[in-house]
Image 1 (cartoon, rainbow, N blue to C red):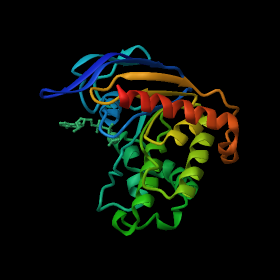
Image 2 (image 1 turned 90 degrees about the horizontal axis):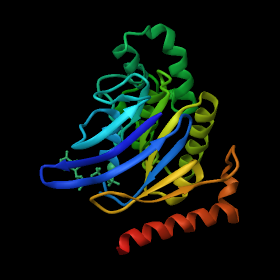
Image 3 (image 1 turned 90 degrees about the vertical axis):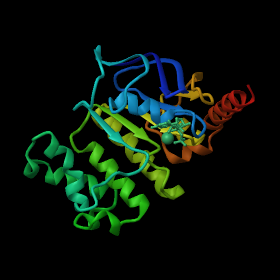
Amino acid sequence: MLRINSVRKLYKDLEVIRNVSFDVSDGEFLSLLGPSGCGKSTLLMMVTGLIEVSGGQISINGEAVSGPRREVGVVFQQPVLLPWRTVLDNVLFPIELLNLSRAQYKDRAMELLSMAKIDDFAHHLPRQLSGGMRQRASICRALIHDPSILLMDEPFSALDAITRDEMGVELLRIWQANRKTVIFVTHSIREAAFLSDRVLVMGRRPATIVDEVAIDLPRPRQIAMMEDEGFNRYVRRLRKAIEASHAS
Ligand SMILES: Nc1ncnc2c1ncn2[C@@H]1O[C@H](COP(=O)(O)OP(=O)(O)OP(=O)(O)O)[C@@H](O)[C@H]1O
Ligand SMILES: [Mg+2]
C-alpha cells in the first residue's frame, strides 16, 4: 500500500536520511524506532507530503505522494491545535477542510473525545488543557475523517505511563476495528514492541534502516503481556539493535 523507495533528505548540506527503502502493507502496524535527531519526523513528514524528498520516491497505492492526501491522518510530534478554536472545533477542522458536513460528524467527534477522556473539555480552548490532553485532542482530530493511513509521530510522549499504555491499547482497538495502516514513530522500545507487527530500527543521522524485527505476538495485545518472557525477548532484541547502531 505504501512504498518508500531509496528516499533521501538533505537540509541544505546536512544529510538527514540516506537511502531508506521499505514497504508497508495494507492494515499493517509498523513502528519506526530510532534515537533523537536521526530523522524519524523528517521521514514521516515526507510520507504526509508536507515536506519534499531530496531523492527517491514515496507512493501510496502506486501513486506518487506530492502533497497532503485525504486518506492520510497525521498526529504531529507537537500537538498543533488552533488556539482560538474549542477542542471540539479543532477536532472537526479536517471535516471543514474536506468540505464535509460538520453536523454529520459532531457525534463522532464527541465519541472520539470521550474515548480520549477529554469530552468534558470539548468546549474549552486548547490553552485550558494540559500538554497530554492537547495531544489526545490532536489524536482525535487525526481520526475524525476515518483515514485509512495513520501517521503518528510520538503521539503518546507527553502522557503519563499509565495513560500512555491505555492509549496504546485504545489505538490498537481502533486500528483493528477499522483496518487502518499505521506508521508509528517512537523512541520507546517497549511501546514499539507492544504495538507493532513490525519494527524498523533506524540508525544515527544520516538515517538508514539498520534492522527490522517482526513482532510475532498474539493479538489483541494486553498490557499484562509486557510481563511475558516472549515480549521481553523482543525488547532485548530491539535494544541490541539500537546499541549496535550506536556503536558503529
Ligand atoms: N526544517 C529543517 N531544517 C534544517 N534541519 C532540520 C529541519 N528539520 C529537521 N532538521 C534536522 O534533521 C535532523 C533530523 O530531525 P528529525 O526531527 O527528523 O529527528 P527525529 O528523529 O524526529 O528526532 P526526535 O526523536 O528528537 O523527534 C536533525 O539533525 C534536525 O536538526
Ligand atoms: Mg521527531
